Amino acid sequence: MRLILLGPPGSGKGTQSVLLRDKFNIPQISTGDLLRSAVSAQTALGAKVGEYMDKGHLVPDELVIDMIKERLQDEDCNNGYVLDGFPRTVLQAEKLDEMLASVGEKVDEVVDLEVNPEEILIRLTGRRTCRDCNAMFHLTLKPPKQSGICDPCGGELYQRADDNEQTVMSRLEEYENKTAPLKEFYRKQGKLKSAKGSGSMDDIFDRICSLVS
Image (cartoon, rainbow, N blue to C red; front, side, top):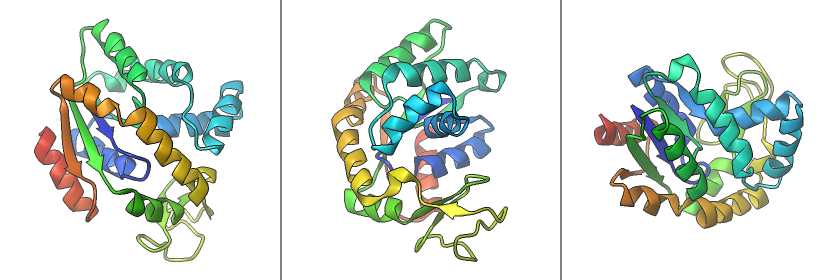
């Protein structure tokens, strides 16, 4: 299964893609994780990526495409994968189709998680991430047992630079301008399915599984 999860920032793509990974035993490929890893490694690529992410802007297509192409060549992708955060533009989607067609493969399903902007703002500005294991928490929706401390590993929790209100609004605007058109791109291919992204994590997961199983 080659599955793409679409949805605005904070729609729950990361959480749901991990659940899909475990259910179908295929890797979850998060563009955000790949990009943040490059930033943390302080590589030349990471420095370029960081400049865009800190402002809430999308990383240029050519940088993202090169990273994804390299990742999809890994052996664990042979039986499929869940793409979380890629593609983000129609150009990226076209490049992905070309990349897969060159090896006789294609995207099987595309699920769009629908969440209203007001709920997303609450989700993202309250989000906290562990510096050590990247576990996710929320000040009100999923608070840690001890303030500022990660439950699993004891690492420090922090607010990502792109999770402040101003940057979140910029990310949502950029999503509408550059990523939302992907829905029509995949609708024309007959691959797009929509799932309500509000409610409990399990309810959302059940909706997604009913669309892709």
